[in-house]
Image 1 (tube, one colour):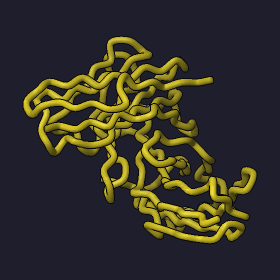
Image 2 (tube, rainbow over the protein chains, first blue to last red; image 1 turned 120 degrees about the vertical axis):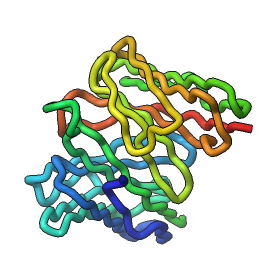
Image 3 (tube, rainbow over the protein chains, first blue to last red; image 1 turned 90 degrees about the vertical axis):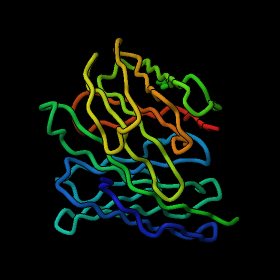
Length: 117
Length: 113
């Protein structure tokens, strides 16, 4: 079953505003990752936060992780029209069957962000 | 540049046909994944492989099989295509172990008529 669940499903903001997307998950994780997908294309990795980290920054991106609440948020500051895309969280949990080192990467349904120029 | 290449961007097949979707990566990654993406359902894991000839079922393996004869190539097989398998199929690869990012191919939009 899908691990992550993003919220909101869709978000529309003006250029220059900040965009916040949330992700909730169900079970213990090794890390949580955020990906971006432009329409009809493959996904591109944005940032990874480990389960023992609380906050991480990368350029205009800020990710937080609260393992007690099983939730994460992605903040994009000073948004641009080019940030228009779908954003997915993905959780990385050990595979039960194949032993140490094998991990399933499970995605949520995504948040569709529209940044209006 | 690292690359995951899927053999087709668009594919149209008839119901009942056997369909092969090919994925090749040039990064020497151990893990490879096949997902399908449908509107409102996000990405769902079909199968993944952590080594040559090794495979594990994901969340929705029914109607699919996979083959990994070489490390760089992971094939998804639809034994008898059905209209409910019309979807976007995404292949990805990553290094062995946790805390590694996945690299995605450009996707194959499959239509079964």
